Image (cartoon, rainbow, N blue to C red; front, side, top):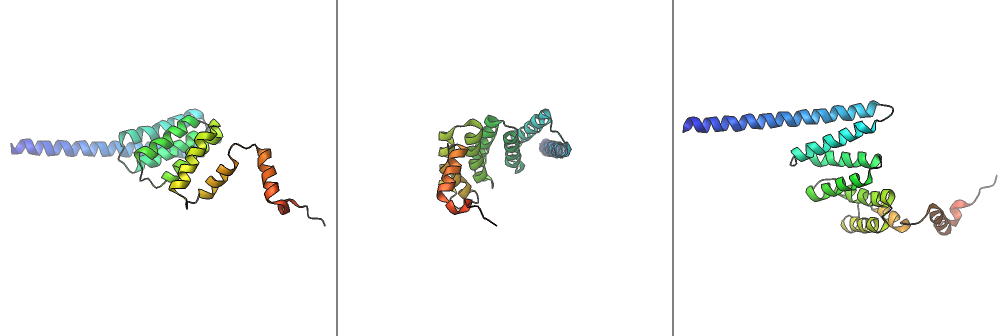
Length: 177
């Protein structure tokens, strides 16, 4: 019986070491991919897709790891940067739902609203999420940006300029020499 117990302990220990080793290999692979992406002059969308998948695979395999929400946040930012709005939104929502204590949750709300507004043109959903962001984080660094976004939501650039001119008539005076 004692030998069986020792064998069980050794087996569990080896499994843990193997998992830890695999986790470290995945994290190192992600770091290499990030580094390679930063050094190229023209980004290959295939490389972006591979990195996003690597981030998601890590988070799926090691959901409780502290790197998981950070990797998903990076994946969402990449997806957004490469105009993959739906994928970006899905990733931000995943972070919000799975990692409510993650330090960048406010940014996830803000960016989700931003993507709805600018990539999907879904003004109603953007309004809803910007409002939720302000209700939850009224003093956050992005709160003024969210208020401005709500103020100009759905307006054309020309409408925004006219409103700015109306509210700030002195800012557009021409200075004569």
